[in-house]
Amino acid sequence: MFVVGSGGVHLVDELRSLGANFIDVEIKRFPDGEKYVRIAGSGERAIVLSSTFYPQDEKIIELLLLGDALRERGFEYLRLVVPYFAYSRQDRVTKEGEPISVRAIMRTLGLYYDELYVFDIHNPETLRYFPGKAVNLSPAKAIGNYFKEKLENGVILAPDHGALGRAKAVAEFLGLEYSHFEKRRVSPTEVKMYPVDVNVRGRDVLIVDDIISTGGTMIKAASLLKKLGAEKIYVSATHGVFSEGAIERISKAVEEIAVTNTIPTPVSKISIVPEIMKLEASHIV
Ligand code: R5P
Image (cartoon, rainbow, N blue to C red):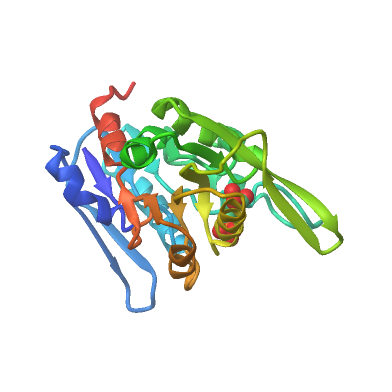
């Protein structure tokens, strides 16, 4: 049974069409701006679903309130599914005095939830901060399925070496070649990107990343690929955290952009809902 927070509402119709069951929940706001939640059902186990996109702080508070309400109502085992996990990029101290924000959020959610499932979190190592079982799900097959008709003799590229595993997973699913871009500093202010060990001339290319934010990374990679003679350039990512104007800027630079629906956007064309449904079917220990 799913309990859906406001960051999961966009997934409900598809979940329902696949046969998901829901526990009714009331979510509203007090006049002073504070959140109010109320669980209208009962049971022993539940799956709480909410992606923590903007306004992310509000959605995190809601998850704490839902966890507390479910425990209060007598639920014994709670599985939490957070397709896009906010603060995941703040995974280290870069200036003295900063927090490891992702750790703070994971530890706090761990007060209420037994299991955590996320999709393609920025740094999978951060899952160790969650006190219970924590699983990083991959959208590689869903992304591969979406692009498979468009990529005959194509190549899959990651924008940097750190993202290579992501490109590899999509490429292996499609039986295609994969590689990554390398960044080389050519002056104190200029960094050059170039694709490693792969010839893109005359080939269609899909660039895959975890997050697209400003689109700067993708636009730079696409313009380079064009100079190197690539044919059609497609871009994809798990999370479309698009800043103002990013979709338009990227759309002008590439053949097509498609991301998953961990965050609802006009280009969230690839669904992770079938993966979420598997979590309802799988036994909660
Ligand atoms: C960075 O570490 C992430 O993996 C993405 O490459 C980054 O968030 C993309 O940002 P932007 O779209 O602003 O270039």
